[in-house]
Image (cartoon, rainbow, N blue to C red; front, top):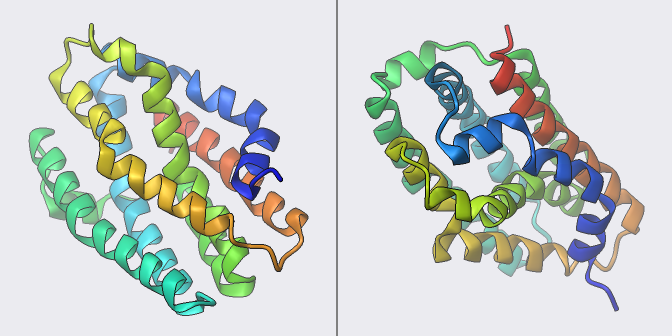
Length: 216
């Protein structure tokens, strides 16, 4: 029997192909992305992390088993420590402070995506919220795998170091853990998982658009 995560990935394939080949992604992995676009992305993503932390907190509270609750709490802890710490270093490398990031206004796409995640986790089941949260983590792993050969010729150290994180064993283990957890969602109709997964995948594509166009 095909796993739920595999079915969702197959149904989202057309969207994910667009994500993987988005100009922002390709130029970043080649090391030629204009720095102002990356700076914009980093400030926006710092704001997104705040949305994501709240979302993981809601999912932790709504988890239907002790194991799922523990998994979500541990992932939330990782986001709150290592992820924020790495972004603080990245901000410093770009000439920003934490105060600069906190003062930056999230773009409309960023607000919309974050609001979608929070609404899904708050108003729907744990499993639907998890399905909505998964594309953010998973697409970054697939992007890194698809473009990893470009990193060998990437002369932009800032970009190559940022991208290499998503090829690490720890990050791939995190994605595998989330996929495995969602695969246990046998007590809910598949379509109820498919809708938030596809919507989040579309938001991931639009997020790259937002960054490339420096929205707003």
